[in-house]
Image (cartoon, rainbow, N blue to C red):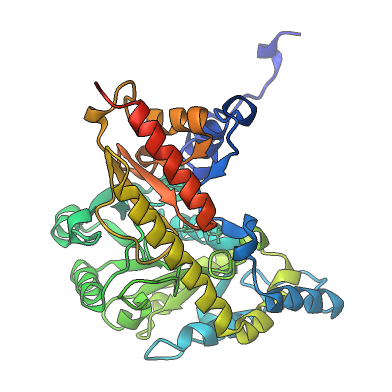
Length: 416
Ligand SMILES: *Cc1c(COP(=O)(O)O)cnc(C)c1O
């Protein structure tokens, strides 16, 4: 039968949006890996999921929390769109520890991971004519989601020579009376940077001056291992309203459990008064929820995960970051302008003019996958061409092996 007889067709808009996501881009790169041909086992440094390594397993406390949740028989039911109260309260208490004010249950909305939180917020803010400010480089789901929404996206720069701080003059030049929000990711993905308190205060003052809301993506909260402490943006919520995004995925290393949150960290109450909080609730009533059984485990996870678990994970991340940074210095034609001090990532700049037969960052990633079975994330997809993002959240032996192979690749492709 001829195809054109059917009254439906593919959705090109959705396909184009998905093409911008991390998963989609990595899939295309992974297809180039042929372990039997190279004789080299695949090393995946393309995304931030160390749960595959024995040294990065979650705490047994977290596992017990889920077993307890299942056995209680209390969480086999549907949950409210915003999530169950005990989980919301536990997250409010957890976040309040480092804020100069206390959050309540009403300030917390549970989501299917932080990715869902991003989708919900962008949907709520996407009113006709509105624009939003994203960092460059960025976590690509923001661009992917916005591409199928009426929101206009404008990019400000993060400055590598200034520890990837926000170019605040750029922000002021971009914003106008239709700007609704600025997005920040701290600790940084893809840059592995951590903002200072002074810089965050300046960002908040700029947001206040512009009359815009701050969306602070803090999925790597407390995953810091340099000289700077992690400070939640909500500390500056008395200057400009802040919405904070969080998740169990990264700090507890259970990305498959799909539990994240939106927190209204706004002590003046602007977001409740203007109805943004109510719109977030409405949006959650329309979309999927994290499984109730996972929600049921949240209070136990928040209250009982031992500090020693987090200290150990940060120690492992620091060792991996230090090792990666040192080995990278030894690789020709690549450079990392800023030593990672948080999250699981570093941005690495490619000196393509010194490489033969590698046209851009995408080509670099494709060929590296094919020849060395190593998967990295190309910078173009994070809005920064001719850089690559590397996740160092791996076993040290794997980092040694990977950096050795990247070096061999660069030497082999050196211009003569
Ligand atoms: C991983 C990540 C997310 C998504 O986290 P999930 O909770 O697993 O959905 C969101 N934002 C950033 C910056 C991330 O790195």
